[in-house]
Image 1 (tube, rainbow, N blue to C red):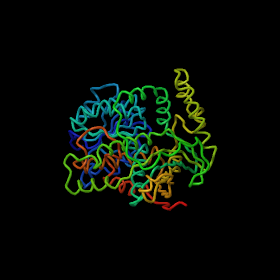
Image 2 (image 1 turned 90 degrees about the vertical axis):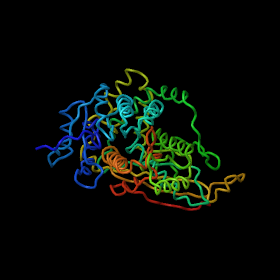
Image 3 (image 1 turned 180 degrees about the vertical axis):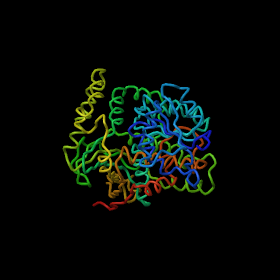
Image 4 (image 1 turned 30 degrees about the vertical axis):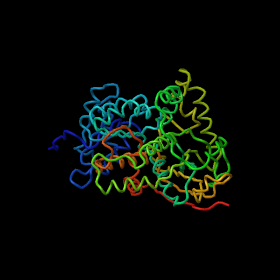
Length: 452
């Protein structure tokens, strides 16, 4: 006899039958334990097609049969009533259906109306900033906590940046931190097709993002010592890593800068709805030791040809995405226009297992921050840290998303009552970094030295 159906599920995974969604189900099932101390005691999976979601659930549970207590819900991002019904039955919605500019806003709006928390894996700045502009106030009123970029975009960058900041012991302080992302595979690197589609649509609608930013009040900027770093060249061959690197128009940069603005507005961090006195003290101490810096992201590789492939992909998207016919070509033939970096079929299981990433954070600053005000003073300290882990789109992203959900479920009172925030602003002081380390990600200090 099947167990009684819960009225409200701890987690509902929306977009469960997609490329990433089925891996999120598989990761969530590891922590589903109705009778144990796990905070994840009830789970539902949702999508447009019951049959496709059921197939994804069978795949995720294999070789075991799907758990009987995991319910399948039917919901469509184009059907507000179905999303309202879904959100009313969820403590936390994991939104996995992209591109998010097409499918994500309605999900976040339904959660804001219902008071459910919502985490998504978007890496689309226009979507994230529009959700913040339009849904922050309704979410704050209803007690819905909405956090975008809870996958490889942009938690490794956010927590990696915060980890890096803690390595600058007083009186030293960073001025700039460059993140170098390197993707590795013993077979071939195949990117997430959703990331490619989002990039195409992002370029096509870049004007909307600029208009949105012009329409909103300018947020405060952090006080960073010394002059800003020079812009530098598009491609560099000289860096502490001994690798080729190219500037990347990454969501990570946008998300980290939004976190910096939030911390500038709230120097002691975001107070929790019902936080414990111990956590209040911890939160204040955590943010009081944080040191802001200019932040940017570059793609790095020992092979110049890998960067050339990324460069040509960007050029094709930049040239064609602004025209309807060009967009249709880009979206129809991703493997051709990305020189094989993306393909509609997605990677094989073997390709996923063979892949990994490394993200180095190279910080430059002053060994004594008092020297920043001296005329002609030069940066004299360098710190290099690293975050590394498994394949980015289908392993690291589900790990990060599920751990963020577990933090929400187990520590909700210590987190803001509601509103739209970045991962760093919400999860920075929590134990999320330790959880990620327990599940396959590594945070390391590589170098801390004084420069001549």
